[in-house]
Image (cartoon, rainbow, N blue to C red; front, side):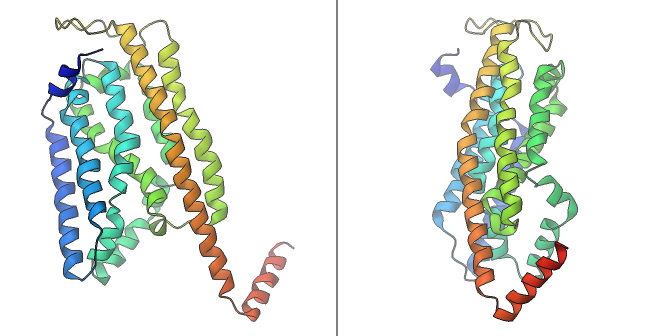
Amino acid sequence: MPPISVVFSSWTFDGTALCLILASAVLYGAGLRAARRRGRHWPLWRSAAFYVLGLGSLAWLAFGFPGAFSAQLRWAFALKISLLLFVVPLLVGLGRPISLARAALPERGTARLDAVLSSRPVRLASNSFVAPLLGLALFSTFLTPAFYTLRTNPLAEAVLTVAVPLLGLLFALPIIEEGDFARSSALITLEFVYVFIELLADAVPGILLRLNGHVLDGAGPVANGLAWFPSPLRDQQLAGDLLWFICEAVDLPLIILMFMRFSRSDKREARSFDELSDEEMDALADEHLRRRG
């Protein structure tokens, strides 16, 4: 393992990550300014969470130790990608960017936002049945020679820097900003069970990396003269340990968020039923009986 001084002093430049961070910061800041002009109060702690925790964690992963050594160390790359997928989106989501957009945009802009959120591609990609499978597919490439290509190819690095956090947001935002991705409580129950099983499955690639006795990506030792560098097999095992741990560690907060989402949806549906008149309830019951034959 690297000395603490190396972990905190290592840095690199990532142009793609810098563009992504600057664009996100500017758009969020513009949203704050527009919301203020419209008389909408936005909690300071949400802004701080977005900038400090969300974009700050993204900056450390891209410019700090994980970014500096991701091409050379399998475990640094696994740490970077898993945190970009699971942790950064949750921290960015604390800033509620979609809710801020609703507070900042005029009616026409809100209608366009609703159209995008309700479009088939977004609804499909943000579905809790689809997004986790894409993450599992990504981690499964770590078991193939593609692991080396993803770590060392500059184009692959640029694509992953943008695509992985966006994929994580597609999974996290429907859970955090439940009102903008409304689901029935019955569907959320199915998603809850599915996500619970799938999140456990995400740890399988990490387990296989840890238990394999040979180097799966076929890459040899890195000759850089650093005494603390592990052997290729030990590097792979550390990558498996981290991937396994992170995939299991994020299960609990995500499951808690999904349970809260189910609770809010159930209360909303119960409230909508309470507001129905006796005639509307009778019509609803008749329709239900008719559909059952």
